[in-house]
Amino acid sequence: MRTPAAMIVGMVLCPCGLLLTLIGTLAPNWRQVSFIPEQPSDLVLEQGIWDLCRERQSSHDRLCGQEDELGYFKEVPVQVARGLMPSSLVLTVLGLVVAALGVRCWQKEPQHTVAGASGLVLLLSGLLSLVPPSWYTHELEVLPAPPGAALDVGYSLVLSYLGSCLEILGGVALTLSFHRCCKECRASKTPPSPVLEPGPRSITRAYSNPWDVLDDERDGRRGRSNLPCDSDL
Image (cartoon, rainbow, N blue to C red; front, top):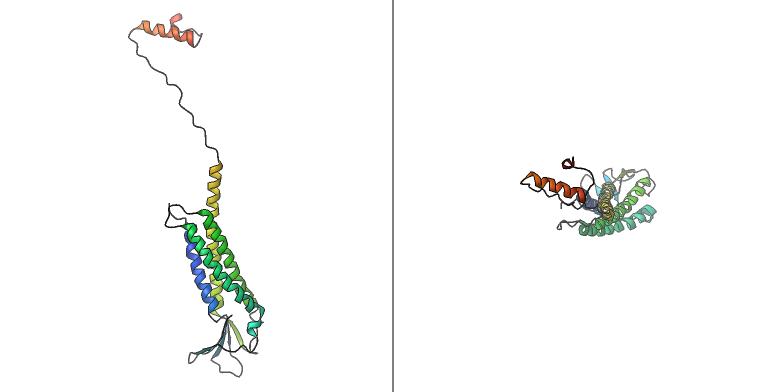
């Protein structure tokens, strides 16, 4: 049996979402702060959920591990992202392991129930990874930053959005496996249609003279019916 298309879509989208979410979680570029007053015009401050970096765009000199002088890491959206993003990554890996056991490309028949359960796990992981970037984007202008600086969305935030959306779509695709499982359950509960056995076949007899025909008609009249036959007329 070929692997259903929904399972293939789920097994392709979810690993891609995991990779994008992993990059978005680790890369320190959720927000870019540029044009900082009393600082060089090419200086850009990159803020993530784990680290702060300074980069000179003219020379591409990059220095990470900057001190958090403004209390950026103490903000609630950053703390929530620190908790939910790693949890989402662990849940995604768990869901992919269960999905591999359910899809079972090396076997003839996939386990639709296991594949559907993995879809629910991956759907939950996608929702968990969608909450931090959404909240962070909403609070982008409120989070601590040098006064008068320009604030822009970083690529890590965009990758986190894309990864969570791919995980949600892949989880929904795998969850469709429950539909096949329900169809099989309904088919097993449907009673089988009765099989009609063939009735007795009539035996055709060969006659050698007209008198045998008359004798058979008289015998049939006595055994089966009282209606007159042609020979009685």
